[in-house]
Length: 338
Image (cartoon, rainbow, N blue to C red; front, side, top):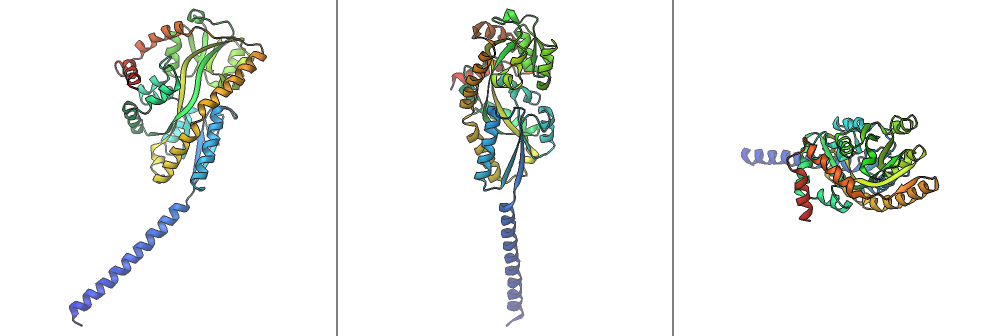
């Protein structure tokens, strides 16, 4: 054999061994990835048993089943991991946490998102869900990712917000001077200023003693949240204003999401949507039960004429200078194209 042929055979042998070694390494790495368990915490402020909690537990079941145990989803109700702002910060820092939040809160990062919680924006939840499928919303999602936050699901229906007060409220005029507890965000504050009330931002766990002590005259929230905070024990009247309809996105930090294999992230997103598909029905059932409880406990319930409240709320749209120009008109155009 010539030296040239011998050298060629020698090099070929080395290359075959090198490729075989590489192939073995890839197989080992693939096997390790497929066996890895991804532990994720899901945080939300709602109480055990509320519709959101039921959806969360359904998501845990589906995600763990669909991933064959590669996803371990821990649920933390009642703000056990901290309040909304704390958990968002944890997510941004890369923690393995997903948080249920509101577009009114995300308005601090992407101002135009706040309009999805604006008063009397839509007639029903289907219209809100439709808006999250538009190119307009995809642009907002991209802006949110630039802030280090990614949306896992947009499909959870949280409920319509109503008023519980110590004194009767039948018209916007009845809200004049009333101190109404609101979340601490511009959307809630500006909305109730437009309605004529004196919005008083408080943490939800401060609501009950604040009503007892006369710090506030009433509160607003979905019915199940009003019951969960025992607001009905320290108020007398419920006005079914339905001034805001809420869908709540589930959000994680982009730096954490980037550590997940594509199939794990897909399972998380698909099972989240599947779990949330029943959220509207759960909210309806819970509302019926809550109304029965309120009636039994002597709460006076008013199905108020919502039109005057809507007319007053429209003033708020003129005052939101954080938004893009003519944002309300843009959203209405999108709804008309549906």
